[in-house]
Structure formats: structure tokens, C-alpha cells
View 1 (cartoon, protein in one colour):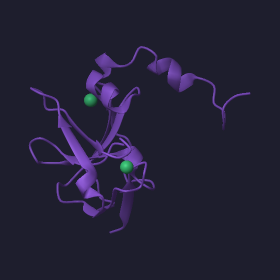
View 2 (cartoon, helix red, strand yellow):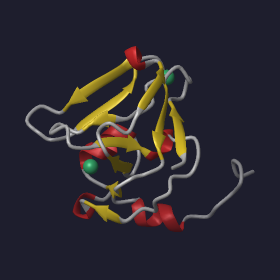
View 3 (cartoon, rainbow, N blue to C red):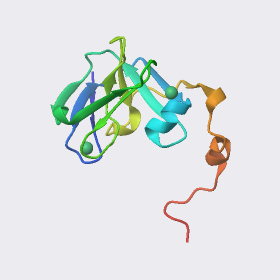
Length: 134
Ligand SMILES: [Zn+2]
Ligand SMILES: [Zn+2]
């Protein structure tokens, strides 16, 4: 079984997981828009113990939305999203962007699409450039 590493933006938080994931959802709910500052969250779900924190675990700050089953975790130093346990402790949720490499699972679905950002469809068909346009 291969493993894959992940880290936050400043690099102080570093972890490793087995590249063995159970699901991969793109969540368009309003809370995930707040969490990511973007159109949707891209989250992988795996077994709760599928993580080895290699550094910076003391910097992990968790936030549970009161009265909801929505949580997030981020680096106290740089604010980048990092893995966290679901509230029922049944899954480890890994924000895919923190992985250093490509997971062995493809996105399976888009969820909470009724809350999709109004600009999302335009975003995915907008012109592409390899850098800031001139
Ligand atoms: Zn950081
Ligand atoms: Zn969501």
C-alpha cells in the first residue's frame, strides 16, 4: 500500500496517510463555501486512524459549527485546512488540497448542489491561462 503525504501552507503541519480512501465528495454547501473561501470543498473520507502526524499537530485548531454536523480544522499559523475527525468519529476527513500528490480515488460526486455558488457554472467554463492574463 502506497502512502501519500500532506501539509499546510506554511509546512509546519505535516502528515502521512495510506493512499486508501473510501470516498471523495465535492461539497457545495454554504458552510463549505465559508470554510474554503471558494465554490466548494473537496474532501476525501478515510478510516479514522489513517493518519500519522509527523509534525505540527499542536498547531491544529478545530472548529465545530454549533448545532450542526459541520466541522473544520486548520493550521493556527497559516490558516490552511488540515485533516480532522468527523463529529461521530467514524471518518477522517482530508481536504484534498493539502495532499502533496494525487490520491488514488477520483471525485465521485457533487453534493448539496442546491446551495451551489451562483457563479460556479461560469467559473468552470471560464477562459484558462497558465498565469495572470496580460
Ligand atoms: Zn501552516
Ligand atoms: Zn459542505
